[in-house]
Length: 443
Image (cartoon, rainbow, N blue to C red; front, side, top):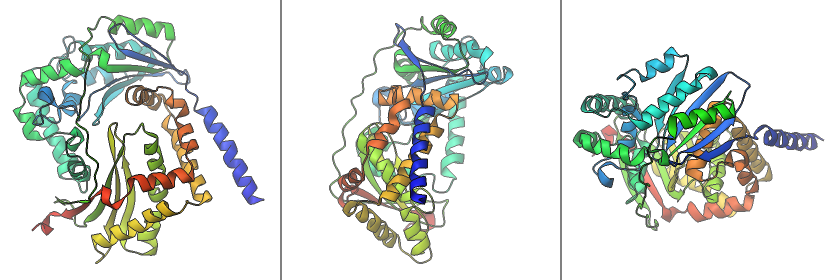
């Protein structure tokens, strides 16, 4: 009887989540190539304006010069400096003075800028983003100022934080030719060497309306909003089409071994990393389910085995680093006592082997599905999150309506798929074995 009630409850929750997640939106293109997505939600007097540019850390400066990393992240900061009509340093002051908040972020695949305002300030948000796109001031004063800002960010967020450099260590060894091997924040010597003309050329190449998506979500009137979008964006000149031709990575057929020394840690970490498909591929969704199975919470398989049962590790888990062209799937453990890094990898491999040779239990499979359903609901719990999802699904996945039906991909995955994908990608001869070590152990 209890089981029947349990599964009935799950079925009801699935139905409710599917209904709750229906997001209505309208999308269209301006003649200059700007893609516009509108989502009306009048439940609160708020509106968010968000512009996502199809440029990220993988896009190098200086005509794709490998000595010019970190440009996209640098522009995340530089484009707050000011514009023809916004005095230097006043961008964020204008936002806060009008009851709003704003921010920006850069990944290897994209850069996003956004504002959240009371809905009566929609026009202000559009004007600010059109100013950023149309005529920002890119001069030596701004470049020199933001160089120091980025250097301080690198010191405070990466160089002086324990384990924060593990993604850099993984990427530079897992990728040999693709620009994912570079740090998103860039190398400081590259930013120091870059000229003002190189920064101007980078903006001209990547920050045109035809390389962006504008999302407006919240308490809006659709016809009025369309008129405002046309007022502020239709006359912005289109840039040249961005063409990328990144080199392809050769398959990994033999294990790669590497060491990385972090001066901020006392306890080493064992890491096994695998190159996996980009996040839009179905196999990437399956790998995300495997990650949830292995690593989501203290009842997950890796934590239970290495931390609770064997008492070999302080922490253990799996991280799926999702990216557009290739991803990285990382299994890790922090040893307890005298346990070696090699012994942790061996125990992790035991759990991987189980997935490769046996179907996971129906109960565990249902738990994974329930967690993913919950994440799907929460991912669109506010207009800000909805705006972000709409922008990314359009620009990075090529399918805006994934905001409503992405969960169907997970629902279509079977236990057999999990076994098949684990065998396809999580092979010992297809991985990087990284010893992430305290600085004092370096020889």
